[in-house]
Length: 562
Ligand code: NOJ
Image 1 (cartoon, rainbow, N blue to C red):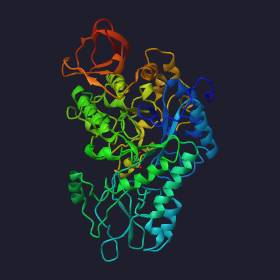
Image 2 (image 1 turned 60 degrees about the horizontal axis):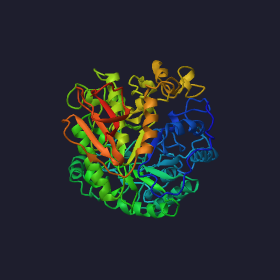
Image 3 (image 1 turned 45 degrees about the vertical axis):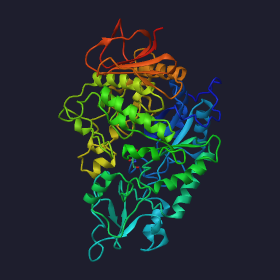
Image 4 (image 1 turned 180 degrees about the vertical axis):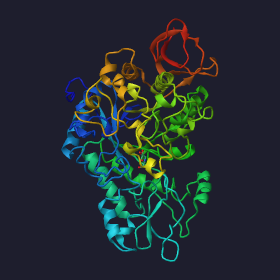
C-alpha cells in the first residue's frame, strides 16, 4: 500500500478566502476508496495512504462522503453521531492524521454534513421513541398524530424519495416523517436545540481543520406543515410554483438557518466554505449560493444533459449568469455517488431516443441509476466522457470529480440482488436498481484481492475485468483516462485565469467552442462527423487528433494562432 505523501514541494495552503472559486474537488466515497484494514470496507487510513495519488492527480480539495457512525441504511447518510468516525472506518485520531497528510500535500478537506435527517439510532431519536407524545424529545423530529379513529392511518399519503410511504408509525397513534428511508427520521429545524447542535458540529469539524462542508439535502431543512396536510397530488402542484411555499422543499425560511451557519464559517481564517446539494428550480438555486449563506450550490444541469452541444451551451450560459448574480462561482459535475457514471450514461441512447435510456431518469428531484440497457456502447461512452470532461475542466468555476471517473470506470450494472445495498432497490421491490453500480470499490492494481482496494474482499462485487481500469494499469499508459486527467489538471492550473469565457460561433450546431483568458481555446466536436481543426497549437486532446481534423466526440484545448 502506498505511503502518505511526504514530499516537501507540496503547495502550502495559505489563507486565500477564495480558494474554492475555481478549485477541482475530488469526491471520495470512503467505504469504496481504499481499505487499509482488509475488512472489505474502505476507511480513513485508506484515504491517508492514497494522498500521494491525489496529489499526483492534481486536485485542490477532497470531499468525503459521510464517514460517521452509521448502520448504513443509506450508505452512511443515516448518521448516528455527527461528531465521530465510524469505528469500522477509523478513529478521530485517524481523521486528524488524514487532514494533516492532505493539508501537507496542498489539498483541502470538505466533509459531508447531513442535517435534514439523523439516523433512527441517533440518541435523540431513541429518546423520542422512548418518550410520550407531546414530549420535548419528540419535538426534535417531525411527529404527527395518525388519521383514523386510533391514529392507525398515516397523516398524509406522501411518498418517500426512495419509494414507499414517508410516514412510519411508532405504536402510540403517532407517526414520524422520513422523506428518505425509514431509518432517516427528519429533524425539526424549528427547534432551537437542533439548530444549536449543528452549529456545534460545524465548529467541531472546523476546529479539526476541515476547510468546508457539502450540505446534504440543503433545500429540505425548513418545513411548513399546516394543521391539515396537503395531499401528495396537491404538493406536486405547489412544487411547480417554485415560490418557496412547498411544505417540504426549498422554503424561504431555510436561508435563515444558513445565515447562522455563515456566521460560524466566518469565525475561521480562511472562512469555512460550503456547497449546497439543493435540487430546486434552477431560478432559485442562487439563493443557496449567496455569500450570506452557504456560498456555493451544486448545479447538476450537465449531469442531466445529453452529450449535445446546444444543451451544454445553454446550461453553461445560464449557470455562469446565475453565478455572477449571486457572486458565487459555478459548480460543474458530471458524476457523483448518486448517478450512473458518465462514461456509461453517454454510452446509452440519448434521452427520448432509445428504449431504455429512461433507466437513467432525469427530473427535478433525483437521478436514480439504472444500468443495464439493451444498447450500451462502452467505448463510445468513454470517448464522449473524455470529451465532456475536457469541456468541464475548461470552464470557469469549480469542478467536482467523483472517484473512479479519472479511470474511466463504467457503472457496474450486474450486481446480484442479494448483494445490493441501496435502500432505493429495497423500497421499490427492485423496480429501481439504485445507486450501488457507481459505488463499487476502486481498482488500484491489475490483480490481487479486490484489485488492490484492500488486502481482503470488497463490500460490493467488482467485475472480473476491473483490473484493466486500475490505477496500476493506467498510470504508465499515456493514452489512458488517468493520464488524460493528470495532464488536464496540471494544465488547468497553469491556464485558469479570470472567471470568464467568450463563445466562439460559426462552426455549426454540433460544436461548442469558447475562449478563456490568455488565449486558451476549448473546442468540442459533439457531433458525428469530423470538422476542420481550428488554427493554433493543440495543448491537449481528449482522444488522439491527427492532422487538420477534429474527430467526432473529441475536445481539444488549444492556444490560438497568432
Ligand atoms: C443526497 C445524497 O447524495 C444521497 O446519497 C442520500 O441518499 C440522500 N441525500 C439522503 O441523505
